Length: 108
Image 1 (cartoon, rainbow, N blue to C red):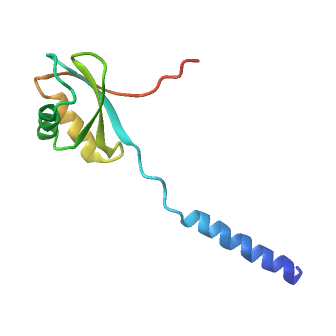
Image 2 (image 1 turned 90 degrees about the horizontal axis):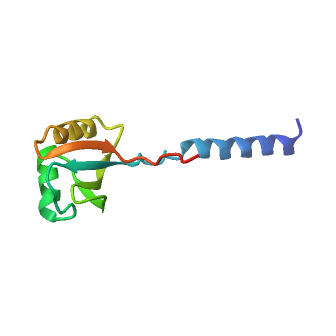
Image 3 (image 1 turned 60 degrees about the vertical axis):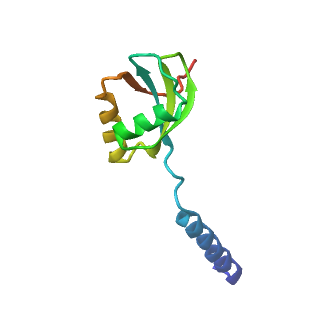
């Protein structure tokens, strides 16, 4: 191998090592649809405080689907076991009729 070839090989190896050393992208937060047993103002600070108190997690209002159904972003990655526990605790609340993941469906 020529000296130039060796230099190119070393340079390519260093670039490849740097690419592998880059930190992975953070996990996306969980987005859920919560159906309440009664109509609620989904964006109200009192509603967000009740969700936080019931689950031990922080929620951000995203949108309303109906007076009883609202979309929230849970501020923890789906891979976090604490996130699963928070959702389970929320499902157990008498004021929650249902809780489901908010996912995009393929319309093909």
